[in-house]
Amino acid sequence: MHDAARRVRRRLWWCGRAQHNPLCGPPYLIRRAQVIACTTAGRRGEAEIRPEHLLYGVLRVARDRLGSGLGRRGRRDAARLGLRVGMAHPVRLLLTGQGIDVDRLSEDLLGDLIG
Image (cartoon, rainbow, N blue to C red):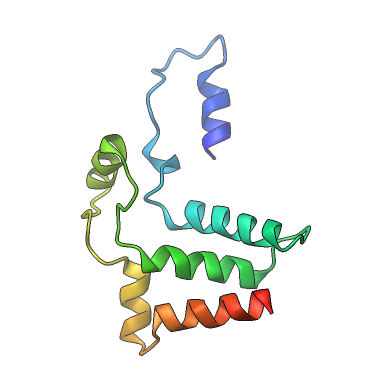
């Protein structure tokens, strides 16, 4: 999505401003989860990303607090989206509400992926 938005902004006839797009930033779950899934599959030498890799990526993202690793611009974008930096990730809250331990599940899943 980031690459597509960037290509549009770089067109010669584009009259809009070339500002940062908050939809492409790190606050979003799916982008970080996909990056983690890709690197996990790549480390194992697999050519395709399977659902286990994506689930592991989602669980890894859910372990972090919202806004961890963000710079000033990312924190501002998160605030614009209504996300409070430093609060527990909503996915973590949903899973713990169902009685699922995110840390244990992600470690078990990583053990299955490696083993």
